Amino acid sequence: MRDKHKTAAMLAIGNEILSGRTRDANAWLAAQRLFECGCRLVEIAVVPDAESHIVSSLSRLKDSYDAVITSGGIGPTHDDITMQSVARAFDVALVEDEGTLSAMARRYGRASLNFGRKRMARLPEGAAPIICEKSIAPGAHIGNVYVLAGVPEIFASQLETILDNFGDRPFMRRQLDVALPESSFAKPLEEIQAHFPNVEIGSYPHRCGGRPEGKVCLSSQDAPQLDEAVAAVRAMLERLG
Amino acid sequence: MRDKHKTAAMLAIGNEILSGRTRDANAWLAAQRLFECGCRLVEIAVVPDAESHIVSSLSRLKDSYDAVITSGGIGPTHDDITMQSVARAFDVALVEDEGTLSAMARRYGRASLNFGRKRMARLPEGAAPIICEKSIAPGAHIGNVYVLAGVPEIFASQLETILDNFGDRPFMRRQLDVALPESSFAKPLEEIQAHFPNVEIGSYPHRCGGRPEGKVCLSSQDAPQLDEAVAAVRAMLERLG
Image (cartoon, rainbow over the protein chains, first blue to last red):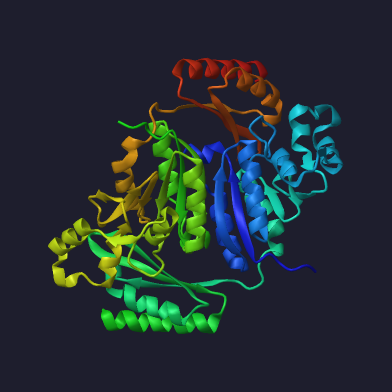
């Protein structure tokens, strides 16, 4: 059994996100699921449906992190160029996957294997198809890259099939409500953070009718350390409040 | 008057997005508003509250696009390190902004200028403060980089104050409903795209009770070309449907 991925990046591909037409859902889901699995998502990138952008971002990310998950651009239309871009990033050919063609022929009949359907059966050479119940068109796994669909329902289904490769020790999160201005506890919070290097502490203010209000959020893979840090922050806030 | 920015990148800074705690709202808003202004958002990046990540991403993005908008990390707590990272990316010092300190002193009294408040008054040397009605802590404009807050209400308010620098000719979007499988119109849609290089055409399927359903989305800065392309897609779909 090989080691599970401890760090990951997400590469969302699609003009529809960059033009504000569509609010990202896939990176958000991946962030939640990877956290629960204990894999650190270190970077999210969103790039257009343009081969040069996909290739350069993917090349950078796959060399920087244990794994990369991509979403989008694997359908049959002209703007779906993720598979050819992944093939180029790995310097391999794009080949029709026989298993996918057979599955499509069984479902639709061989005569219906038109231009568009055949396009969806192309994978980078050497890639394993990622198959889920929501779509007959597969994703692809090659090297440390997982190529998933953009349609959120299909992305979510494909994501569940690969998560076993990610993380080894779940992250846990605790949150404390705060009704003080951040500036009043910034210094003691910094001191607590310095005492707990294995706990990540963040402060997130939000507005609520003019009074200061927010949350201090703590997360860690180490439950006893997390408990201790939560207790320290709570005691500090009670002292100030 | 200098030229308006025609391309931009968005750099969202914050562990809360990467851990799945918070769904991004700021990049989504920026994408919508830049589209309406006629500035092409070419890349979105989300990075953690870590100086090395912020500096390397910002350096790459500011050299690649006309402008960069950042969000997050400008509060008073230890995880707010955007201003110091921007200063490092521009190789300048971080200095207390006298105008901000004066405004804080007027609002809260000089005795209340504690560690946290003074921290929020620090800007990269040479930066102009970005001031909005929602927060006394400013954003910063230096070179081609605009440093905005992470709290969505403040981000939105600051964004409106800088948008006059972005874009020159609004993008327009038109969408057509489609009840055919993408694979059946992939080829003719590709031909239409080839005829209209100034119109960006995307196909976005979604699931609806098992029947194929989706939208073909067309956008452009050129209204007559957009009208012609919409007519061509509509005629093609009617021919097939």
